[in-house]
Length: 481
Image (cartoon, rainbow, N blue to C red; front, side, top):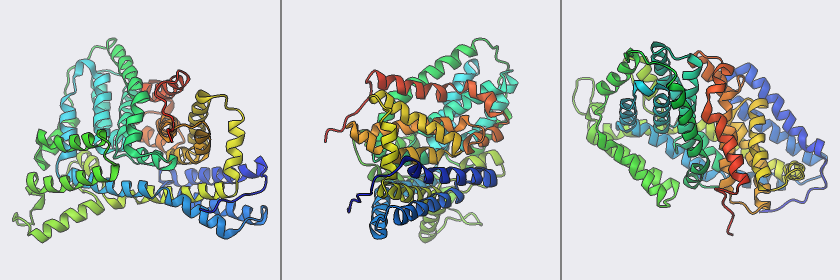
């Protein structure tokens, strides 16, 4: 790849495209709300990349062809992540069709114990979010049910919402089905399953501390009678529409074992997707019947599997809460995230080609005094992006591209960067009222962001634990190359 040698760049000029991007994103958040990442922010990144290229061409006299080539090379770096995301979309749709995800949710709800409501609610949301790979879906379905139970047991809504958000974001952060879990290693240059394994160092202790706090608080309340119609509707809806069997959970277990043994993400997820298709045919025959109740032909069954893998699974049971929870997945559902990655890599490539990214990194590095301050700066930058850019994805993308050079300078494995992005970017997005994640959570849970914020123990503890562990040199991987 051709490496440009741009002239010395002044910091205000390097920051100009970033300020331009911030203004566009804020306008998008005001105009489009939670739909800002479904097109408007992609356009903001593309326009910002065009501005970078224009400044490089006219003010720095750089070759357009070389800038374009370097931007394209930056996009190429994200192709593995794009393939993983498309595979994950297929896997989610087929795992729901096969009954794997419904079984995970069904048995997760069975673990619920009224005597320890808060930690049980947190664990349940973690299980569901791990299964579906989405904190939003978890909060908008099981979260609503748990709020109803909490009211019946006289728990304050903000406290219950904090437990729901903590569990939902633990699962979102650790699930290979989550778009943010795929996005963080994509922009940092690490690998999906290595990234997930590396997050255990900071995520598991933080989650255990959060559960300890929720357990302690639960002792101050006397639970009432456990009787919630919404939870029964979810269980009944799953039972009526799927054949729920415990051995369906062996397939996710196999994928986890493959990942633990070092199998690359794409082969492991592909095996899981194919097994999901086979399991659907074997254990969910009711999903392959025509209008008269007769079994579909082999050709029609094949069409159903392909349509589900591409378009996702759609459930029409007549029970809205169950339909919302299980109508998702498909390759097409990943296109917004894929386009965001491509646009962000174009912007980051242009920033690198003109030397703007390097100049900003130099300004940050000049204030970094060691490994712990580097990781703290990364997490802090993610939090600031969540506040000023109002979007969780951009809070991963921008710092991820900005800090890669700094982590290479300190000879750190890029898994440290991808983990820091999630510790600071993924988890704090829901704590900002005007961020798309915070706005969504407040809307579906009916609790103001600043009301549930003090009780999102996991989201608050994790960044602190990450910085503390960096200071103690715990859980840090160096680049052996």
